[in-house]
Image (cartoon, rainbow, N blue to C red; front, side, top):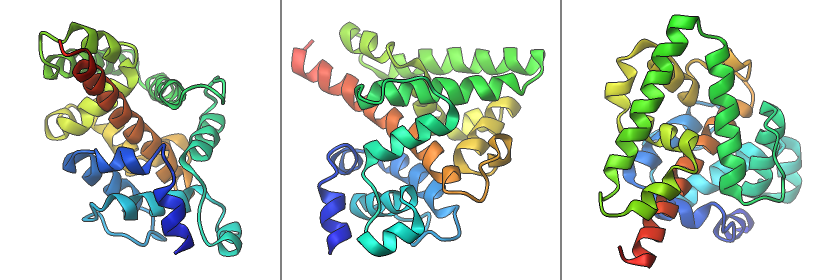
Length: 222
């Protein structure tokens, strides 16, 4: 019961997952379920169960036994930012920290590619950015501008929405493998909680970016 109440009170995570699309929750569930210690399957779509499981992944296993819960999402994000080496103000808005993490992960991935692979991947990123903007109603210029403030998170969001198409492109398919933990070895995080928390933060950040743009467009009623 303590972990359930804690999850429901995590305002940076639970309400967001309640608004996530089925496709977004499916991707997150796949990432979480990829770790053997996970208590959910990749078929899980319940926002509360996804929240509890991610919070548990973010907390130290031994400490979790004492407190009977994991840690809140902001603590997970700050921990991930430190792990990947993203230079951020830990007191900033979460979406800003999530964007910096996405930028660093993408930059580190690109650094491992050859010149031709890097060029191909950057082309996919540019196309992803354009595609995500097109998904926003053409008249919502302000919303598209807001989306433009988080291009790295936007790219992750498009990779989720167009996974089948993007995966067919080798360098992009490899990056999706990183997100789902299949190619986690690229960042040497395989077998640790980071193989879940790092891609999870990217996914959740992409959801937050999408919702922020949609909510802003709705508020100004363009």
